[in-house]
Length: 208
Ligand SMILES: Cc1cc2nc3c(=O)[nH]c(=O)nc-3n(C[C@H](O)[C@H](O)[C@H](O)COP(=O)(O)OP(=O)(O)OC[C@H]3O[C@@H](n4cnc5c(N)ncnc54)[C@H](O)[C@@H]3O)c2cc1C
Figure (cartoon, rainbow, N blue to C red):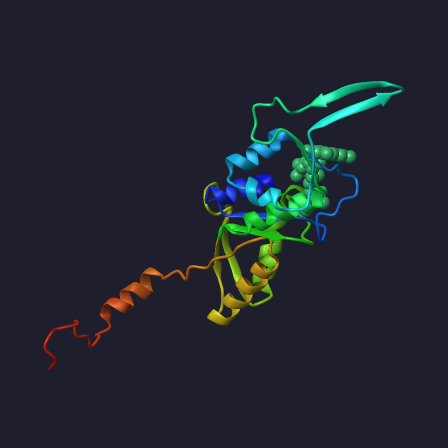
């Protein structure tokens, strides 16, 4: 989640997939360490974070009989927070998720389990794409995985705009991909367009 926040903050389009419906994992601890709080400060999140319900532990000590032993003393740390904050980890993650959602490039998908590419391999994904296109009467012409802004680039023959829209809506609603479509124009179509005569008057030119 923290990486998701940092990537989104840097303007990278980011989708965090979480297979559960929330961050409530009962096997996690509650301590937010001074170094973590310092990172929150550097990110400009500390004030808002500390406004959330939490407890602050500045010293840890142990009493044995009349003896008082100091186990930890955070008061001399060179950080803004010289204490450990106690907050359930799912509240911490909810906070980070809320902050991340402020960036338009961030999306969090709960109940979304990642199980695609590594399990199925590239050919498995290709078969799934072919099947999807065939279901609307379309055909896959080429498929490439890519570095950069787009992970996959497809060239497909789709019978009509409605079928294209149905494919796009179905894939996007899964939450695991963001599909954008670009209608391609054939050379022949450009030739035909060049031969069409079009009635056009530039703005401001005298009308006839
Ligand atoms: C018992 C315990 C106590 C701890 N106490 C503290 C503490 O007090 N303070 C502290 O700072 N750190 C503590 N830690 C360490 C801290 O919890 C981890 O460092 C931190 O949670 C790691 O974050 P992560 O995002 O890498 O992994 P995780 O927190 O494990 O997150 C991984 C997430 O991915 C989800 N997931 C897994 N597989 C898939 C899939 N295929 N598709 C989609 N989602 C999937 C999981 O449901 C999970 O929510 C503790 C750890 C444990 C185990």
